[in-house]
Amino acid sequence: MEGEWGLEKRWTAFIILIKCTVQKRNKKTNKTLEI
Image 1 (cartoon, rainbow, N blue to C red):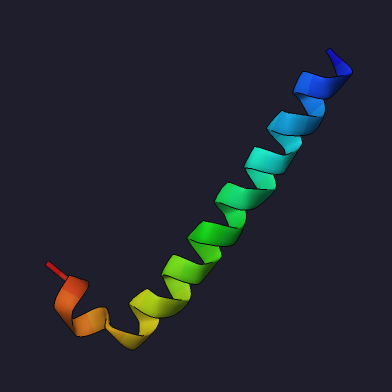
Image 2: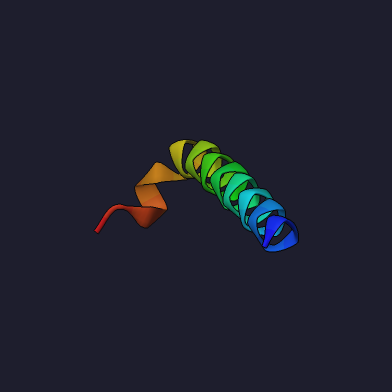
């Protein structure tokens, strides 16, 4: 259980990091993504 929980924490941090990176990119290329 502890191993799985640690993996889940890692995935959550990884996903948050990706979301932050995507948001930063989106700010630069906002015009193309706005619908």
